Picture (cartoon, rainbow, N blue to C red):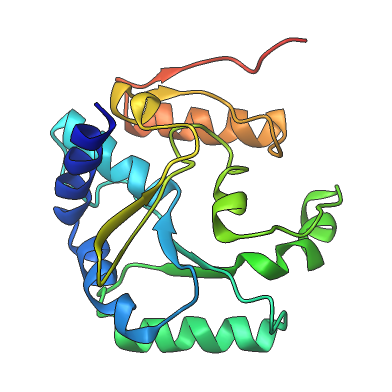
Length: 193
């Protein structure tokens, strides 16, 4: 079942010209442990399931990578500039993050400390929902998927909180925005303990 969902995901995200350009051009840059992921992947799938244009409602495209050898903002900005110059995505906004350095700014931005991530895959496993905790990339061996919670919620259009890191306020805000754009989503409430 997972392999058929994985193939369905590959076909669906390849219909989005921005994601397709990223998947075609990023391998040549040799960015360590990179993925395009998060909302752009989920929203492309939701667009397909709603019958919308592939890029409808997508604010930005998250590209993540992992380089623990250089945790500077300067290096991350340089990586973003290289990616933007190399991948023609028109007016789409690319948001590039070195997941190895997120712990250096997370507390200041979100008010809670974060232990350093061990890998890009570790970071993806903390993203706000199970459906958006998905990253894809391409390399010499083909299409790769990182989906720590699987792909069931994504294709069932279920928005379920991943309480590993996200706050309820952030989850509720994202879920409400998404429900307005993709009305067939099933948004699950924040769990009570």
